[in-house]
Amino acid sequence: MKKTMMIAIVALFVIGLIATTSYAWKGAGPGSGGYGYNCPAYGSVDPEKAQKFYNDTAPIRQKMLQLRGELAQLFAQQNPDWDAISQKRQEMAKLKTELQKKAHEYGFGYGYGFGRMGHGGYRCGQGCW
Image 1 (tube, helix red, strand yellow):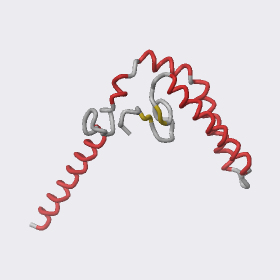
Image 2: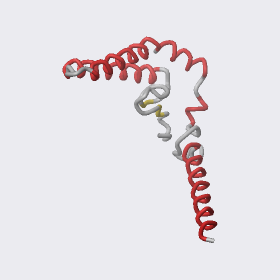
Image 3: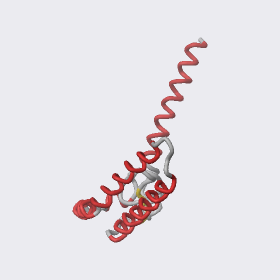
Image 4: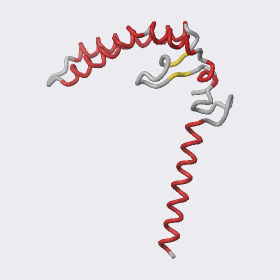
């Protein structure tokens, strides 16, 4: 009896966890401030506009990727050059700001850029995140 009860409790816990996670991922509904794909901006982005933004910002994103590699190399050194690390981080911050500015110019709202860039995520500016 104890074993059956324990299995039932664990099963209910797992089902509840899955349901809660699914609800949190999908969001509470349009306009409710829920997280996930119910954000109005997800469905309202023009694919051509997004592709143009993607193409327009390719050099910025490529430079950011290069800087991440350089930062990794600097950190991996036996005695890291903290001044060089600081300089690379400042350069990365300028590129992130440039990417945010471009996203704003394209009407994609505000946040950390368009899509996930490895640091936070996209904010549609309409109460989604």
